[in-house]
Amino acid sequence: MNELRELYQQVILDHNKNPRNFGVLSLPTLKAEGYNPLCGDHIEIGVDVEGGIIKDLKFNGAGCAISKASASIMTTLLIGKTVEEAKLLFDEFHGIVTADPESDADMMNLGKLAVFCGVREFPARVKCASLAWHTLMNALNELSEKVSTE
Amino acid sequence: MNEFKEILRETEISANSTFDVSSIRNDFPILQTLVRGKPLIYLDNAATTQKPQAVIDKITDYYTSGNSNIHRGVHLLSQKATKEYEDSRKTIQQFIGAAHPEEIIFTRGTTESINLIASAWGRQNIGPGDEIIISHMEHHSNIVPWQMLCKEKGAGLRIIPINDDGELIYDEYLRLINEKTKLVSVVHVSNSLGTVNPVKDIIREAHKYNIPVIVDGAQSIQHLEVDVKDLDCDFFAFSGHKIYGPTGIGVLYGKKQFLEEMPPYQGGGDMIASVSFEDTTFNELPYKFEAGTPNIAGAIALAEAVKYLNNIGIARIAKYESGLLDYAIDAIGPVSGIRLIGTARNKSSTCSFVLDGVHPHDIGTMLDVDGIAVRTGHHCTEPVMKRYGVPATTRASIAFYNTKEEINVLVKSIEKVIKMFS
Image (cartoon, rainbow over all chains, first blue to last red; front, side, top):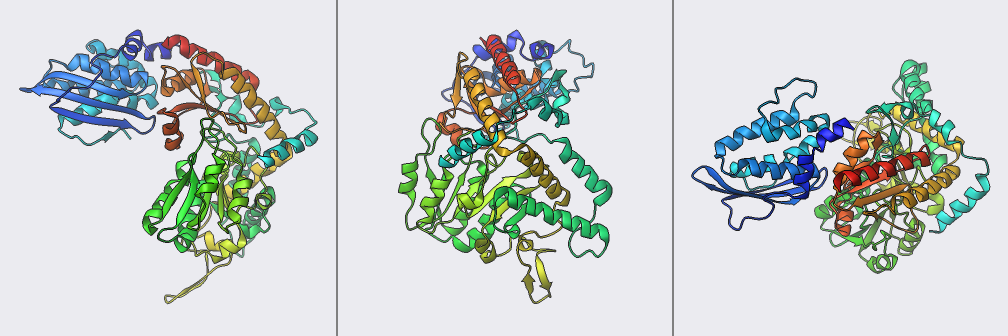
């Protein structure tokens, strides 16, 4: 049960139930679509970028609790950040969910992202947690074609 | 439909002795193991089944003391391996009631069996404007090979629709048949809905117009008695690993007259009678379709799995599983927020469901922590998921080694999921 509490922390359950920035931007600067064929998760992300700063960020779609909460938390972290900062956070996030569960990685500075540490125990769920981030990176790289986590 | 009733009737006669599930469980070493510290509750049998000790031993024995390449070897081991491989073909022949052993082609599995027909028979017999009938509940492996063939030949795919319970709409099937129809390929038991299709009726109807019929038996061969002569199907495909045998081995049954007229599927060793740089004479059946060194150990171990099942009796297995499925449906169905996907009157072994507000992936992970293995996703039947308007389902698929106690643990675990996400 402990691994479960770690995976489905209250924060994740809350973001799953009440996702922040859930919806569609009317005229986004950039947008991208992500799809996880394994479980049918599907996400659309719209970003407004002005002068290198993420002014607004919204996501839409259907997915599991982990993918929805990850997308929701991502939006709250990145609005107001520069594109460069977003890319650095992506690297950090990627490091967290793919680290060896046995390793004693320093979790002190991870802030809100620390809730995703539990994902490491469930390798099948890493793709769920990363879908929104990968999709956003594609948008930021001005790729509008569908990304796939497969 | 009728054949299922027949099975039930026969079952009542032959299944008088009690079904000792605890003794059967002892035959499967993996069922004695722990997963995440909990006793394994394996309910992912539609994906693959576990292997009895007899099958595992057979593989070990073969590689320990019998390994050799088959056919043409003059030494003793080769002769022994050849005999065992060919005896395995006969075991399969008898198991499915085929008229001749050479009607049994060893393949890698159902997918390769269907691709073999699409490639060898399809390319020769399907032309521009022709139509192939499949159903809405086919596994991707009985959709994509036909789509590829239709694209290549300018032919069309016609789909038998399903009703809300997940049953084929038979009248629509009758309406789809016309002078352009060249082939019908249908699944016997749906892997995502559990529906048992009236394949005997489907075949009889198609044969009125001389249309050949393929039956995808990947989910029926291990749960129902199959007699290909009685069904009168022209082809029947199944996988070894779903019938308690190893992966990488499967079977294509084809009526002799079809197989004889078909060109080879792959070229190589064993499928030739003689080769020169100018021309090649192909070998006779079944070797024409078995190019290269086959999965010898796989075929032998598959036959061992069939013998194991025969000892218990498929009719007794079908009766036990049918009772357990009813129990599972009655236990899971009423749980608040659960919607069963696939409620056909004639069902086998599979209970697919969705839960309000909880994605199947989250259910799958939570059950996993309780040691319960289920499958979550679209089960390679995306058109079925679209038909029900769901991205995925959670599927508990049973085998004859599962128990009511395991179903009870599953239900408790589902209730925990509901509590967590409420």
